[in-house]
Image 1 (spheres, rainbow, N blue to C red):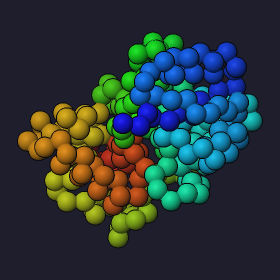
Image 2 (cartoon, rainbow, N blue to C red):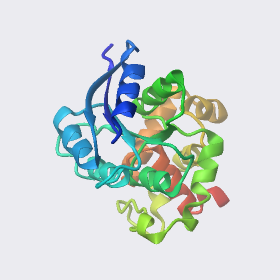
Image 3 (tube, helix red, strand yellow):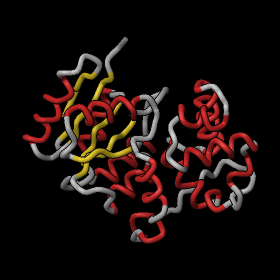
Length: 232
């Protein structure tokens, strides 16, 4: 099994060295490059095509938020884009919110243990959202309070026949799966709740993302919140 290839982006050399040391000691993880700012994170991502970009949310010049937007939105290669895992000192500040909305697959705190960091990279690489259910609820429940500059333009799949009802392209079963994704449940938990196989849930989640034109489960949760699904 090939190791997960990781790019570490942080403006502090000591932080980069510590992150590399924590990840490289794992047999299933490999740091393939480093970046000192957002511009370099985008350029090196395009060049090395890592599986995961571990991105500091606040860097001089191009921030982690904008770098995430560019990696997700301007990916120049065929095939899957890297998963972006945000690295932050603060739990759920406005920049973390904006990064998740821009397409990051989750976030991890800088004071996380080596085991927690490694597991976060694995989870994001596998396509799951690196957010606990309690964090997911706080995340989607506070978007209305974010500064407009960080939120514009509104999250919109733009792929359905009715932009006023973007979830209208989903089947009833897919809506049930999306609701549980929005509540922060993992594939295994959704499978137990809906009496489906875990592979069946993963297939439905991928189909939901494709139909809605979204990058990951976090964006799906946000769209579910904005569309009123959680209030049904």
